[in-house]
Length: 313
Image 1 (cartoon, rainbow, N blue to C red):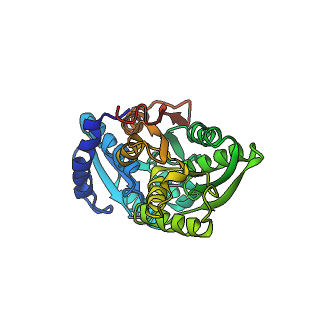
Image 2 (image 1 turned 180 degrees about the horizontal axis):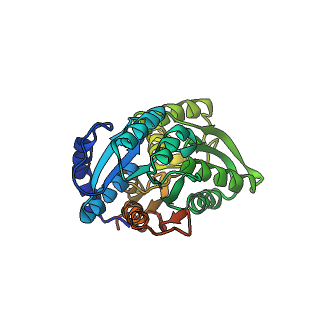
Image 3 (image 1 turned 60 degrees about the vertical axis):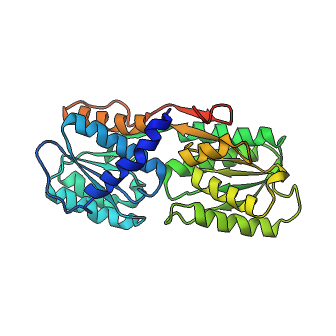
């Protein structure tokens, strides 16, 4: 679990990550040359494990080029082609590999190993290092089902375009379907280009307006924290925070922890070990670069349920 000091340190270190990001045009320094490519650097979770990866890479003496395509998934392909041409020793992706097949082919043609850092599985990826999305979603959706007594309308916020998040929605769907008196009122995919909070708030506001009766919405299950925070803002702005609408998220980022600790509608999230994901990814890259054959192509890093009882830890 991240300490409060570590979480505060991430904000400052992200400035360094942004400074080194050159959209694939930087000259490589001495040592192993590693490219980290993601369209999701605006998401706190991504920021955290990229920073952890950089910290471990520094210990290993690597030169790391962090490339943020700012929400443009298609641009990941051209950035992969760029770094393949430049002679990277490895590429680390935080994106759905199914959407960047041409980039994976370019890396394979150049004999450059590719790794997923909270990405997805693909035969061309040596290993994907992530949290167990199935387990996290089961924990939060079961929490919701228990809290509302197995009955009532639930709003879901999902993002099926990204495999680690897609599996969370699939498990939550299954849990809610196993409770015949739970109805999924809406299954929302928010716009994440601005981080996800603002659009989630707007969409939740519309759902609240369409369902004005107290008790018409029992819970909001979000596949990650940004939509949960947006839903919380919408509920509070509508003056409906006293209806007992239960909100859960996943990631337990600092803003979510603060909301949970406050004891309001946002009741639970799951803390991913972002430091562990970033560090384990770097160590896995190092193992492969040393010639080791990996036995597993998915490596899970442990998680922990966060509620008001432990949100300040």
